Length: 186
Image (cartoon, rainbow, N blue to C red; front, side):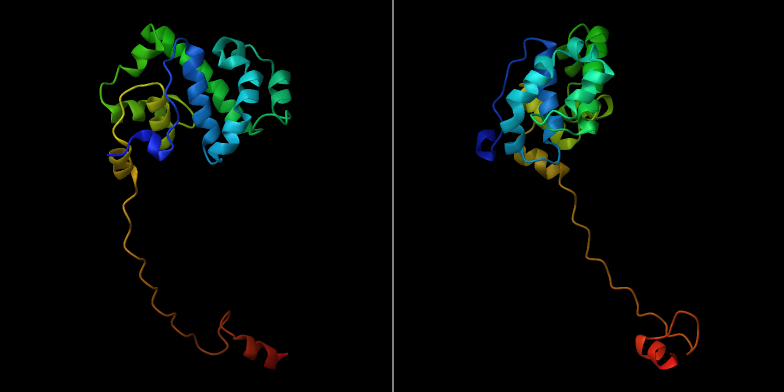
């Protein structure tokens, strides 16, 4: 079985504080629908602009400061993703308070699939790939990439059948004139 790095998997980290978890999750958010290479190139500036992903500092940002982020050319200026990061910061703080640590929250569901589903409900932009990426990078147990991919890959639908040919309408019925018929009427 190929190792995750063979698939281009990101390096894993051992989170020491909540900001480490938020940074990994924010990278997953930013990578949704964008080239990972673009995100990697901008990441040092994103880290700086988002104050090292310290959740408390992010939640203290004024609306004016958030608006300034959205015009900062150093970062990915997507309002939905920026708002998702701020939402996720608040949610992480809440969950850490409820569970004692964020790690205990993550481990409150022993099964990978339940944890991934839980992340999808609690955080924005945490779909199948985002949850897998996040959990893998923070060294939580995940299935092999092949197993994960087989489970989330949509089943191929049978080819669509052609619609039956339209029933011809009587000549002169509204909406049935061909281009040639319309030209001869003019």
